[in-house]
Image (cartoon, rainbow, N blue to C red):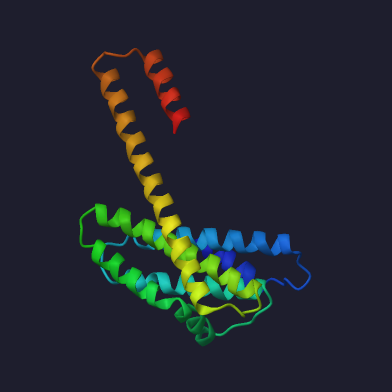
Length: 198
């Protein structure tokens, strides 16, 4: 959590007037990454409907930072107006996250992926919006948001499945070693091969 605050402070205090496009792109990339991870992390708390209150400041700060990188100084009201451009989806996704939280364990995994993907999509669309001088069609922004959100959510879901599959296979190897079916050397060799495949 501290990482995103440190990165955000560095961006908001920074001066990007003389920055190259590559430097701006790198700064945006870093900001979107740390804010997306932070948004996923806050969903670990168990109470439904609290996520929105915890995630919104992260997303608002991220949009403000992206605006700053592209030369725009924005107040909270302006940022909320920008977010409302593709906001119907954000409200709906936050409600779905809250409902998913009601499903023990599985709901938490889903909400982590959703919060990460939602924040990432907001970051990408905000970058596109500011990079194009805040002159982008609302329908284009909404379509872009939906496309990026869906892709990131699927990517995160696959990552969770892959990690779950890896964990299960490592447990099987440990059990086989405990049962004497594998020597220590065989266990280490199989473990290394398994990790190389993931």
